[in-house]
Image 1 (cartoon, one colour):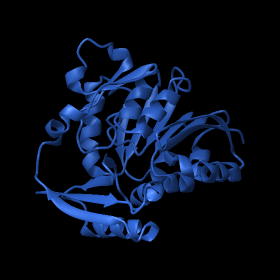
Image 2: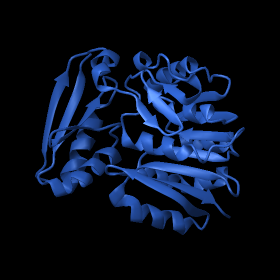
Image 3: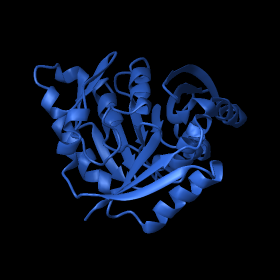
Amino acid sequence: MPLTRLSCTPSVDALRNAVSAALFGAGAQGLQEDGAALVTVLGPADDARLLEALIAAVRTVDPAALAEVSELPDVDWSLAWRERIGAHELGAMAIVPPWLAEGRDPRRTVVIEPQMAFGTGEHETTRCVVRLMADEICAGDLVADLGAGSAVLAIAAAKLGAGRVAAIEMDADAIPNAEQNVAANGVGDCVTVLEGDAALLLPLVAPVRVVLANILSSVITGMLPVIGAAVPAEGVAILSGILVVERAAMLDAIAATGQWTVRRETSEGEWWAVVIERTG
């Protein structure tokens, strides 16, 4: 079955971040820049209402934006994207596709088979979390990865020394890819892939010392009480998937809980990530 390509071109460049945030907020799983356009791809299993919701969200923030819908041929995406996916050196860890893994130290290399699941290392939000993780994961840590996608962050946590990692993902289509990547990286004894809503599953795997949440900023805000209940004092959460323009609002939301202090933050491109420590 063909895939659906939605290309959204903001009417002015100043609205680019707002259009990007609107697409993610309406359910886009990833965005690619194509010149002035922001492109997302919907799979055969996606409901037609999702396409309508994405376009409506863009129109809300930029009524003059150009939205173009087209069909893509049913192709093997792991082959189609092969030439565009490279190796990413991220401090203590590297994320690479299988064809670039030969000769690398498996202890510091996360090998990800690129498919439709989010998390190949090509997105800034993933890279931000991996950079921050290196100084936060301790030997034997219990970790929960919320919105695990390809399980890239869960695998990185295991290779950084975590004792047990719950990779929680609600998209059924992403589960086989996550399980394949966990097995290929030899961390199946440490990482468990769980399908379901993180708000429901996180309390079941708690307590955990580290929570990884590379998801929509609106979802993170709503999840802060659940994360706070799952993490003991001095535990940490690494939050990503947040636009730089959303930084102030997220810091306000974090402060409003009265449970967290900010330890470190980083950014890449238009994306921001933060490490927060549980204090109360």
